[in-house]
Each structure stands twice: as C-alpha cells, then as structure tokens.
Amino acid sequence: MTAQLGLRLRHLVFLGPNRPPASLEFGPGLNVIYGASDTGKSFVVEAVDFMLGGKPPLRDIPERIGYDRILLGLETLAGEQFTLLRSVDGGAFRSYAGLHFSVPADGAEVVELADIHNEKNANNLSMFLLQKCALDGKRVRKNKLGETNSLSFRNLARLLIVNETEIISQRSPLSDGNPTADTPNFATFKLLLTGVDDSALVANKPKGPEEQSREAQLELLDQMLDEHRDRLSELTRDPDDLENQLQRLEKTLSQHSDQLATTDAQYRGLMDRRRELRKRLEEGKDRRAEIDALLERFDLLDRHYVSDMSRLRGLEEGGTLFEVLGQAPCPLCGAEPAAHRRDADCDGNVEAVVAAARSEIAKIELLRTELADTVTNLRREGVSFDRRLPKVEDEVRSVSADIEQMVSPQLTRLRANYAGLADKRGEVREALAIYRSIKDTEDRRLKIENSSDEPKDAAVSEGDVSSAIAEAFALQVETVLKAWHFPEADRVFFDAKRRDLVIAGKLRTARGKGLRAITHAAFTIGLLQFCKARQTPHPSFVILDTPLRAYREPEGLEDDLTGTDLNVQFYDYLAALGADRQVIIVENSDPPAAIAARPQVTMFSRNPHSGRYGFFPTVEPPKEIEAAEALQ
Image 1 (cartoon, rainbow, N blue to C red):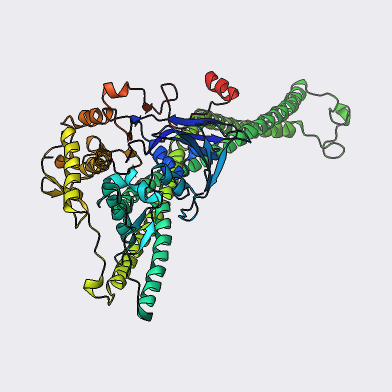
Image 2 (cartoon, rainbow, N blue to C red):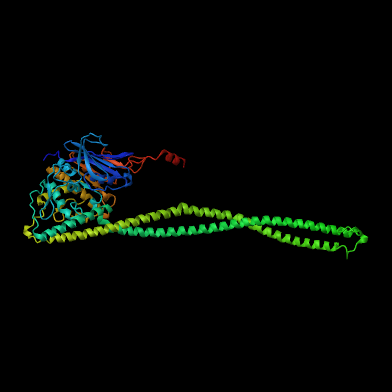
C-alpha cells in the first residue's frame, strides 16, 4: 500500500457577519496548542471533530456568539487540497477545491456532501473522507452474530481524536462507554492493524418468531440508548465522574449556603441598623424644626410681654405722679379737685390702679423668667441636636456604603453563584439518572442478547486480533513509552479480553488519571506508528487533548511525573516524526523552550495585551468606552 494515503489538517476558521475571523493553521509533523485555561484550546479539538462529521450541537461558548460558519482546510498526503464548509448548527457540508480562509465566491468548484454516512451514495462526508484514505467500501463487524456494517469515518474518528474526557477515562481506548459499539470499535482497530476488513463474514440470521422478537427488542433498546446517550452528551463530558461531581457540588452548595446565610444575616442587620438610624435622624430633624418654631413663637411672646410691661409701667408711673402732685384735675374725668366725688361721678382710684399695674408687672416678669428658662433649655436641646444629627447622618452614609458597595454586591454574587450551582446540581442529577438508566438498559440488552438459543458452536467467533499482531502492536507501544522515558515501560502487552494495555503487570485503567492520559496517548501514537511501519491504512493524523495531565494534576505519588523528563522526551519524540504523519497536542502546561520556539506551536495567553488571547480574537471596546475608562 502506498505511503501517500492519508489526510493532513491545514486550518480551522470560524466566520461570522461583523466578526473578525478566528483561525488556526496546522502543518505536517508536530503541532502544539498550549496556554491558559478557558481560551478555546479544547474547543478547537471539538470543532475539528464536528467538522469531520461529529454530531451537533457544537458547544455554545460565549466567544462563539456571532459566528455562523466553519471552514476546515485539509490535504491528502499526495498533495490534493480541499476545504470543508459547515454551519455551526450542523447539517450538510460543502467541499471546495483548494484551501480557503473565507467562503469562496459563487461559481467556485463545490461538492455538496451529506452529513449522514451512506455506503450506497458517495456524496456524503464519510465516504468522501474514506476515499481519500483508501478505506471506502470496507465493512466492520456489528455484533456477535457476524453481521457487518459499512465502515464510517466516525468509526475511525474516535481512534484519531482523543478529547480531554476520553483521554483520562477509566476504560479501554477502544470503548466509548457504549457496549453495543464495542464490537465495531474493535473491528475498526483490527482493520487498521491488519488492513483486512470483515467483508468475508457471513452472518447467522435470526431464526423463528422468538429470534425476530429478540431482534426487535434489541433494536428498541438501541434506540433508547442512542437517545439517552445524546442527552447525556449534552449534559456532561465525563459520565464516569458524575457521582464525584454531585458530591463536590453538594459540598460546595453547603459551603455557599453557609456563606449566603452569614452574608444575608449581615445584610439584614445593616438594613435594620440603617432603618433605625434613618428613623432617629427623621425624628431628630423633626424635633429640631419644632424647636426652631417654638423659639420663634416664644420670641414673639416675649415681645408681647415686654410691650405689656411697658404699658403697665406707664400706668404705674402716671399713678405715682398723681399721688406726688396732690390736688389736680382728675386724669380720668377731668373734674376739678373741688368737684371730685369719688363715690359718685368717678370710679378712678389711682392707688388701686398703680397697685394692679405693679401686680401685673410682677406676674409678667415671672412669666418672662419662666419663658427665658424654657428658651434656654430649648436652645440647649437644639445645640445638642446640631451636634448629634451630623454624626447620625455620617453613620447612615457609612452603613449605606457598606450595604451598597460591599454586602449587597457580595450577597447578589453569592445568590447568583448558589442559583448557578443549584442549576448545575440539577443537571448532574439528571445526567446521573440518565447514566444509571443507560447502565440498566445496557444490562437488559446484554441479557436479551445472551439469551439466544443458538448453539455455541454455531456462533461466529469474537474476531479477536491474532496474538502475533497483538504482540507486535504492544511492542510498538512499548517502544513509544520507552522513548518517552515512561517508568517501568519494559513489559507491555495487549490484554485481548479487556482490549487494553497491561504495563509492567498493571492494567492501564488501574492507574491514576495522569498515567491513564499518557498511556492512552501512547496507545494512539503507537497505532499510528504501527500502521505506518506496516503500511496498513490510517488517516495519518491524531489529536490529543491534555496527554501530560500527570504534570499538572497528579492524583497521587504514583501518578506524579513531575520529577521525570517524560515531557521533554515526549515532545522530542513527536518532533522527530516524519512529514507523512501529523500529531496535534493540546496542553495547559508550557512545552520545553526548544519546542515552544517551533513555527507550528501556538500559545493562548488569555492576556489581550500579550501574544494571542485565545482561539477567538478579543473584541475592541468602543472609543467612547475607552475614553470614559481613561478619565476614571
């Protein structure tokens, strides 16, 4: 088989009206995307898988808003170049000759490709890609009865594109958690190892109504499983970790609940304090205004008292003068002294009038004294309010500032976080219920499938790969692990029953997440190297998401590779690969300096002022916002 069969990714581009293009280019050999979290690295892996026939929906991250089309540029190892176009919502594809970073104008050479595999019609993406790899027309085993299906490119994709969930999963690289798919998955693996498909198989057809009923039940259960798995994939990317997720969420929610209760109590206490202070302030201002009004009235009353006393002193003085002057015309009636008849014509009694005036003056003076004491007390009370009310106002402002700037925003944030966590817990509970339902349904399906009355000697064999091929593949993986300086990599073999690697006497899935990730990567790279060495068909590219997790998140001492040079040897080995194979690594940790300096290495910095922010470009803020921020 010629070595020029296979594919190479060249670029991925997202386009949208009024949005700057988001693009990433790839080349032969080693490609590395690394950098900060939440910058779109794993999204690139998902988008490539989506453009190679993956089911929608594509993950709806905020940065993707406004983009409506995706371009994936590819080329065959023989040099033929083409670009696939697909809507972000899924659906069929268009294939344009040549590499394009924008949608070609009308009139360009284009081929419409359906998104569903159909072996009877070449105008679908799966058959189109399989033809480029000389794998079209191949068949793979469907079940134990020896029934076969046409090979789809999606059968190959799971061996080529390993996302961050699959790379650490606690199952064989040939299993995707769907027992009904394990047989075709293994058949695809066997096809790549040997170059021989399952076209020669003749199926044992079901016999009689009972077998037909069993087949109908199995078909119905398969439909249910497909629906459950589609919904589960929407809810979670790591079904095996749902129990742990739920426990972590419950613990986090409990902590948030305590924080929320404390902050809410603090908020209510501050609100009560502000309400009390405002009441005191209003009552104080009302009393201060009342004092001012009383002082004005008392001032007017005092002036009345002064006026009355002036009038009474006038009477007193006049009466006193009359007494001093002796006989004189009556000041009251004008009668001459001789004509005074006090008991008849005149009621005037100057002495009585003077005495009455003096009495009234004394009463008014007493009232003025009391009024002066009242005014003094009121003024003293007013001064007290003038001294206390500003302090109360300051305290109201301080409490209001605490509420508005600290406690209220924190309470709002905690409530929003709690609501988000509660929603997430609901999703995890739903996903866990679906996951358990899937397991129960799979058990039912397995029981029905195993209840066949077919004689054991009439059944078709499992189709296991020959021991010679399995040993040769294990030796290839061992070579890769040794080149990476993986600890204790001198004994690797392929366990046919578990369909996984056993390394140094320990099953691969029995190790921690970090070692599962790096050994899954070795499995995938080993398969690529094995096929190239034996010239068996392989699409010639692989994508690995976070294979070096053991350097960033080791689960324990046995899972920790930070004290080794495996990361250096890992990249050096991949950098030495030939141009007829392509490896794309997505990592959070920085590669060695020599690797980082290579042209096909891209860092996402998550810093808008340094390097490339992420896969999607940052949007420039409007000029008026920039000006406003500059003034602050």
